[in-house]
Length: 428
Image (cartoon, rainbow, N blue to C red; front, side, top):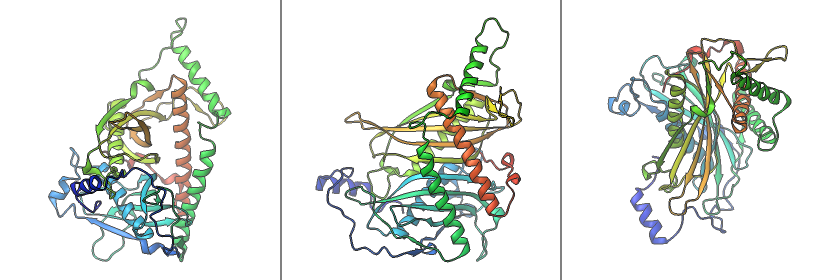
């Protein structure tokens, strides 16, 4: 179970003790003499079977209007599973929270409703406070057989961080003991991912200006806008080019205790994944006037906790389309985005913030980046400097994720040219 006690009991206990669960203490609660000896990957392994084909009432909770699996609900389960796995590695003396979702990728769409197996383990940690947890969702195998590669629906990686329950400060956890070649491969992938995130933080657009190539692209888009509005030319903005500011969708909702985490007074990360994914899906559908197919959740972060009773505000924006409005050709020249394509990959950025009702304080809680496939030729055009930065940030992410997927494909012995995203997307 995600929670240990009924909310009413937790609320009564909090009121009786008069403690604010969000308030930090100066006295650590984590034992200083706890065991931090290396642990095997297999010690944290955990699997759960969802008997969707055998239990129609359970299936009822996982279906969308078209009779397909509702991915947002699966995302909730994956976040809950990552918490179970994290605590198997750290023990119960720490508080473990979701810090980031590094990726969720569709491998093979389901062709039929079936029982699903959710499984995973800790695959990278150096003994500091964070750990990477790799998970997969697959068609549940029969008997004691192993999951087949073609039966894997999706793979994903979560970054979890362990904190002292009282001080809310990061605490060290047990490092990993790597024994087999496969475990070494998984560990190295996690290490490379961790190092890449550190390097990326150095080039964040809040710290550095766009590079020369990105500046040229911004200038080209600005010139194209001038052309569209020049009364002395016949060129006008095509119908398949949409202004970024017109793509935004917003939502707000009060956070209820039914979606709290195991610590009772904060919302668990899986609910935020579900809420942001479904708003992103609606944004992509509104933008294209078609049914988008989900391809991946790209690196996304959880910045601040969301308290029970607060108000959550979400804003979804079409941040980037591929093929883009303008791009760099192979000969390093700027192209005007005239290329027509049957398919368009669209990245939706969802920004979240939370407001305290009593005090009116607002904090950012995370940024979530979803990529969908559209069977349509359509492009987004930024117009303001802030929108240009959103576009550049999304473009960087698209290039980075593509490079990571190519590398992972090659390490598995496949070909980076063998991935057919047009066939691998799934709807909401």
